[in-house]
Length: 99
Image 1 (cartoon, helix red, strand yellow):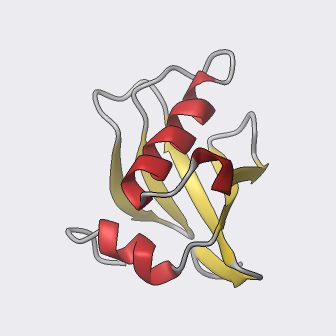
Image 2 (cartoon, one colour; image 1 turned 180 degrees about the vertical axis):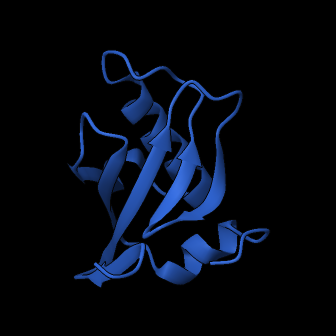
């Protein structure tokens, strides 16, 4: 994956750098080849991953079940598969960020 995303089947593979214990949930922009996302939840007992999926599902208006963590379960750098989503939909929710 050269970019922060890759179109695959009926969805998007999205490379994310999750930053737990933040003051609020927000997409901050690109950092290297990943989309930096701040998450309120701590990185304990899978809470940050759950919050990340919940935040993205709400933001993209898709069910949580459409988002799967493909790799990086215990790492800050993660690869997510978002089923039924297009890169245009992701870019639409990042209006103040230069992607």
